[in-house]
Image (tube, rainbow, N blue to C red; front, top):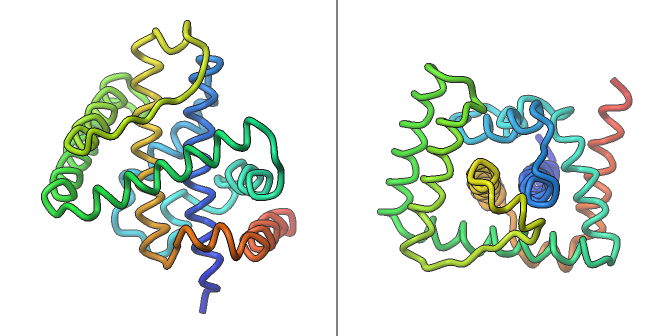
Length: 209
């Protein structure tokens, strides 16, 4: 039987990885194309056999696991911002899942976007624009304000904004998984050591392959 904390840690790494990519775009206007594909692809993995299948394998989550460890164990302004974004994503996810109507709309819209991927590439601007619009449509009823701090010049480019919103949608997806496998915000206070140890264990498993 899989350790419960394996799944909790994997989902947390997924959230952190998506948030980190959104921040990178906000600050530099750039993000690794392969990493972006991995994160956006997680949105369309709706019936995985195992949670790690959502991300296409453990190796694809290495950046997220590393950032999760640093987030839980260091105190800098950058880490404080990441923690703020992490809690904001969790709050928003909880609001969305508490509304059956919004949850249904979210699933429908993601399925529609999945069909677009068949015609375009996963990171095509049309697909990303659709995902960004889904993000806007699901948060609008809650009047939820979510601002990513970054370079104003980069944040004035519509394509960057769309990527950030698409990545925040992916972060919400990982937050849904995190709740489903038994994640709770109290664990981030009382089980930081356990989560850190689990993340290090998962990283060591990659190195042993």
